[in-house]
Image (cartoon, rainbow, N blue to C red; front, side, top):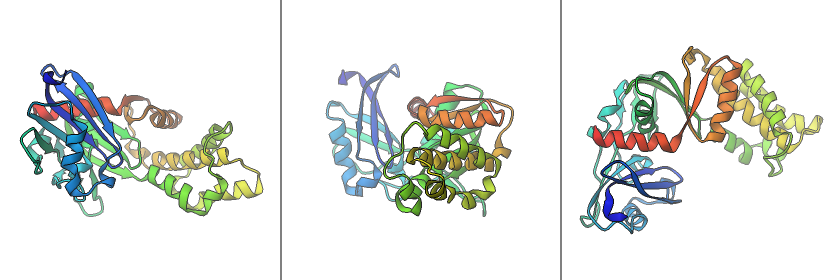
Length: 301
């Protein structure tokens, strides 16, 4: 199996590491994963972690990496491309970190940034998924939403990323759930039969009045104290409120074209339902499919 591997595709995220052995026909020969994401590693640990993950590869191969391995605090910083950016040029901005021996030749793809004052923004990893989307949906032009810890809203025309915006929706949810006074309303519980009811209530409020987000967050705690809202309802309400405020606050980005949603099916389904309430059509694209397609396209570029 390993002898058929021509190169290795790697998605090195903040929390996790994934690798796929690719043969000459572009088919996956093996896949591996590890919890050794960027947040757990020092710069000196990257070579040994990569070698330990790819023990079945015995011939010298190229390793193409996207994601947080190229961050300033990662393995080796890969400078950003400036938006508007033609994503077909990603490989030209790749950097090559030092790697002992000659078995693996790693190259880390750059991210993309916006430098205009007032519109500063950055992405790492999502640019590769957007390149992959352009391969999965040839000729696509329009808005792409990428739900996650730091959601991305991106305007893509073919392989050109013209502009994008980040929303810290997922991280804000976790911070409020774990560290704020709202945590007392969850009691460690996030699931239950009333979660969907709470989500719908929060979503409606967020979509309708996104500018009042900070004035409505405390309804989670007040609802638990005064109206007997269950932990599941409170968790759903907070999630719906944050997602609704993200989408409602950026509804001017939404046009008439179908919107690809790149991410986990569960999270993207929540965004899909929210977009439907605004009359917007969307389709879910698996994040792994987009990442692999993007790494393959970048290698060919």
